Length: 409
Ligand SMILES: *Cc1c(COP(=O)(O)O)cnc(C)c1O
Image 1 (cartoon, rainbow, N blue to C red):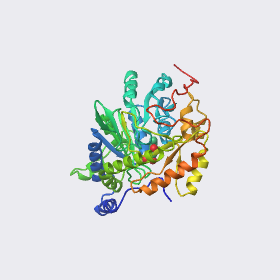
Image 2 (cartoon, rainbow, N blue to C red; image 1 turned 135 degrees about the vertical axis):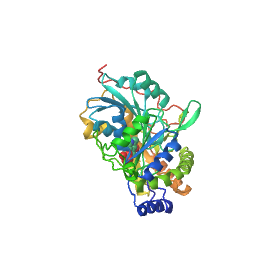
Image 3 (cartoon, helix red, strand yellow; image 1 turned 60 degrees about the vertical axis):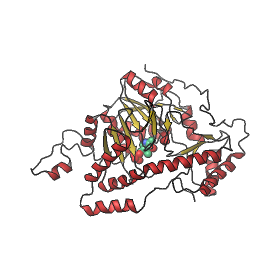
Image 4 (cartoon, rainbow, N blue to C red; image 1 turned 45 degrees about the horizontal axis):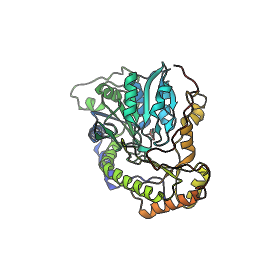
């Protein structure tokens, strides 16, 4: 059986966890501080704060951005549900914008249509590791004076072309970026998250809120020769990362460049193998982005039934996942009126699948995945509505214009 992903961990991570367990300090202490310093150095960000997962990172980012109950946050529906949920945790409403089917990322040309007087932030996603068009989004956020939050859950090690050079996602091209270290992502601490920000006061706020809003960090109280009484000036949360997780994360961070390089090579091989099936739509990196290929997504012909293809591949021993979900189709958001229709988001969920990709994959594994996918879709290749696939910079253009359902402008 070829799984969708495998963590890349060995004795180095086990030894790091053991070292912490035997050290006598197991949560949010020196290892967390070291992991933050190293992650900030890796991304080039001035500040980093580790937390329990990316969802809590997003929650703290939105709070720091000043998102309040009743506000609206412009984001995508086509994402893991945690993106929308983090907005709801603030008592705010996620207002969904459609995606560009070429990148599965927010379509910057539609963002303006989602604004209202209540909009208080923009939350973009670097979906499946591919950076969204940050230059366009930053311009829109600046023009409107809105804070810009990056859901970089999948984008550790991805890069953006910025001011003439390649920079890591999280150097912070918006105000704050949020990362996930869940095992489905490409570096893992079991569970875990990280915020990087350009604002020193936001970083201080993350560190306050993650530890119950307590005025004095444990590390300071522990090291003090004076008795210190802590206070709790604001409502905080327990969003701590443990030192055991952080020690594992530090080992994973050392591996990250190698993991990204290997994934990029594997993705190039998939593109080669699947190139003989022009009815399959592949993602091509735009000129401004280098992805870490956290997920390798393939758009099936519209005439192919997604579940049937996935079942055929599973029967052949190849695990796949369907396209990224749409939050607006889940019961929890279904009653909320949409401000625009989301045809590309829905089509991506219904007609894309994600293929296995992990550093340990052999060329034989990849050939098996490719041949089972090609076999499972070949009969659809001549169908009237087969989509042209993504062979140039632009695919599926001209796009269906998003129809505005409601506008409060
Ligand atoms: C995985 C993921 C999250 C949630 O990350 P956790 O660490 O599991 O909380 C949020 N947003 C996106 C886009 C994700 O892929």
